[in-house]
Amino acid sequence: MMLPVEILMWLVRLVGILGMLYLILISLYTIGWYFKPLPVAEEANDHTTDHAFRVSILIAARNEQENISLLLHDLHQQRYNHKLMEIILVDDHSTDATSSRALQFIQEHPNFNCQLIASEKHGKKAALSQALKKAKNEIVLFTDADCRLGPGWVSTMLSVFKHDHIRLALGPVLIDPAASLFGRLQALEMISLTGSTAGSCDLGFPVMANGANLGFRRSVGNEQDYHDFSNWYTSGDDVFLMLSVIRKYGRKAVMFAKSTDAIVRTEPAGGLMPFFQQRLRWVSKSRGYNHPMIVIPALIVGFFNLSLVFVLLSGIFEPAMLLVYLLFVGFKTFVDYPVLLATSRFMKRTNLLVLIFPLQLIYPVYVALSGIAGLLLPFTWKGRSYRK
Image 1 (tube, one colour):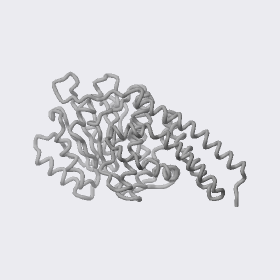
Image 2 (spheres, rainbow, N blue to C red):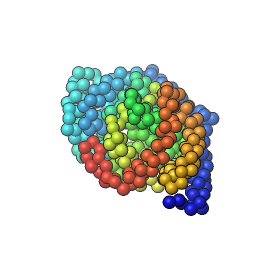
Image 3 (cartoon, rainbow, N blue to C red):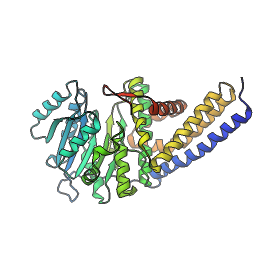
Image 4 (cartoon, rainbow, N blue to C red):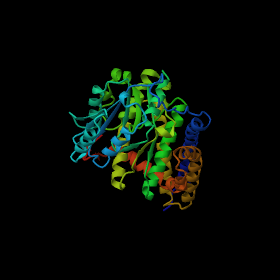
């Protein structure tokens, strides 16, 4: 069975149009990285400087017994005056030894200003909302309980706020260690997302945020009430917070901390099913996005990848379309490479670039499937099932 030539030609034209839109979008992100260099966040190690802030670091933890002591150790090793820091760790009804291990660490470090509290409700948003109400300081930083931090993380993220107009600081996230092929593919994808986040932010239209590494001025939380940021959705507290800041303070109130000292490291998903569930959770929040600054890029990327899937499927009926698919994948690789190269150099992970083309071959299918499934299917996260 063969598809009519007219249909195949219209499909190729459609992919070409979407490809041009994709080229424009990614080129803007690339310009944001290369030609409009982001200000490098300077470390504020000396707490006597004019830009020393009191900071509250908020963490929600659920079933992180293998990671929580490591994170607390990293926070204890920060090159920032501990008298200016408070850490509020909220245990979200863990069923393992997360709470006891955190409490042991706190007891072994009596001068470490860290308090462990039990979440009154269920879910990450509720836990962070509870922590925010207890936070006392003007700057709030977020990270996740399964992350690792360098000793300059706090001071580097805080240095962004020396600019008085900045209300929200976005930080880079790296998947590390990534020993397996699957882990390295995840790391390369995260590098791509970080590059797009940084490039778009510097051009004045930030499109992404990652709750594993961000900070904001306390006035944002007081005025907007963190737990009300699209509380209909399990995920997305980071992006909804960013959108709320943009609506109230403008696009220039968001800055990306382009410094290796600001990098937060997290491990890759431990298998296909955890990875798939994670992506379902990420996509599920997209139904709550209504700002054109986020919706338009998402539609361009989503429909371009979906159109590539149709080209691939058409190859079942017309083998020549498989060559067309390879040509468009090559085009997409050419478009993505400059910003991937810059971000991988920044992350010191250029060794991952050899995986670009293999990733690009499967990426359209992965994006299309996860995008559709994330809008329709329930997902499981931390042992709990959610429908949105």
